[in-house]
Image (tube, rainbow, N blue to C red; front, top):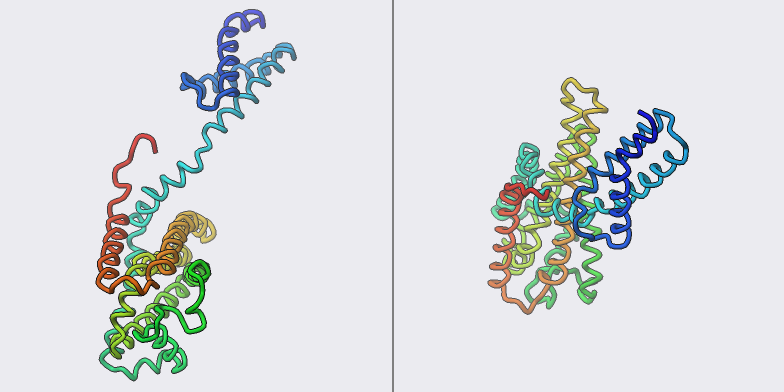
Length: 325
């Protein structure tokens, strides 16, 4: 096809595309530009044809300039980082948790099973606590939850700390535990299993001991609120680590490196959700759990509501896919 005929046939499209570009460059939210992506693809085809047929450099340069401007506008309008993050929080993360339910179940059994089991044993056999935790740490825990201490959930050294300081401390402490539990999954899952059991045993032993000595009300009213997010996050971090370990143990027909790479994609996304949970947990722990003004019954009610919310969110959020996703 001669260049003159090619230009005559498509000139109107190019002029319309140029007008649309000007509108988008002036107003990112311009109306009536829904066909822009399709028009952009056609312009790219015209540029490829012009180059293949050896048309004049003037025509090729003109089309190329429009393609470059169109590319900038197209991908600027498609960059919906905020919308993507919101979609992940509202739907993507709970879907991923349900998709990986086998690893989540295994991690939950290791963590919550060891926590509940050792809590009952320590409650029934009080001296067992000293086989698990040094006496100095036991004494410190008692001081943190002593009903007469005047502070709640903080050691004597940190009792006067500002809430925002404790918020930062809780974030760093919890993220350290979660990352340790996740990353150690590279040891064929054994590391994640170990830290799930270890953290479950430590938390459970403290819970059983404090309940036995009569500090149960201060302890449980403190942990029930942020525990909904914090304890769930630890279990999910373990699930992400177990997934990495399983990719190394049973890669199927894939090389281990490829199986690990594929598993890491989902595990890293799972950890992103874990970080969100830990951020929420740290906020609640610093600004709500440590409050002494609220009654224990109020904290129990709020904590039960938070546990219910987390459960409903993970089980049901994102089950209906919307057209905008």
